[in-house]
Length: 147
Length: 224
Image (cartoon, rainbow over all chains, first blue to last red; front, side, top):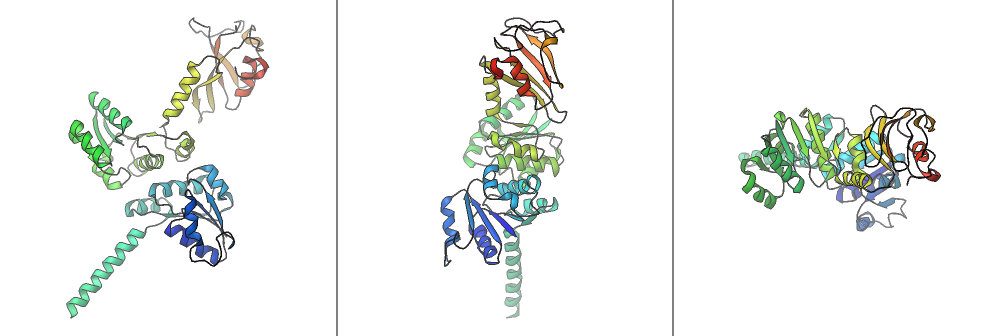
């Protein structure tokens, strides 16, 4: 599988590295050249030596997406820090380039829910975090009551 | 009419001001606190503080009953998202988006965010219109109908210069609909109307035919 990751922040770089380790072809696009360091960190070889691709460019520039290989991508991951950038670039990948699988990081639960209803595969870390906190509070309260 | 304007920069603030002066009901949404406080001194309750790409902010502004949503922030991703949720989630009938970077216009089109207004393109069109001899001006594009209307200047030495309309070799799918002689009123030509150098002509055409049309009105087939 060819995986294209847009945004090499904490989430994007980690998913890129694990996808490469799982044997996929991985290309990463980020506007900051220094973000490449995250792909090398903690690895025995450089990202390129390990077989990864890295392109410097802005997510919503068509030329940058083409350079990063959007036309060959089987799986597209939008993981920049901007919810609206992710939602837009995911729809470009889906509607313009016909990428079969598009996964979008959306921090805002409300936007995540609505775009999920519209057919985008959204992942909302904030929602997961809230659920874990609620669970933790429930358990802590139960434990405290049981003391 | 109830109008929500998102983005309180120069465009948004002046727009809100004019709409209010025209008697419309307006809510301006601004996310930068200091800008909001400054605008609030003037517009009072007609401005709200918040990120206009957050659904609850739009709902608080009353998007469910808005007749028109105008997204004029400095960020094209934000403008696209605001208009997309206005149209598809809140079924707002009319939207207008500002496109800051003309290269992003294709994204607005892809997602059906129309009309998208690009100040850069508007000024470029004006320059084309104002600078003589710049060649071809797009007056109207109707992509759905697959029709365009262009204005083109007749350069001395061009194949069409000095010829009658009937003799000008235009491709099928194009028609001269008006002649604008320099300094005189424009008119609809007859087949025997002679086109003079310096005249401008309006041509209706199928998209993609521009090169075949400009070669008739420019020497060596190049726009002037």
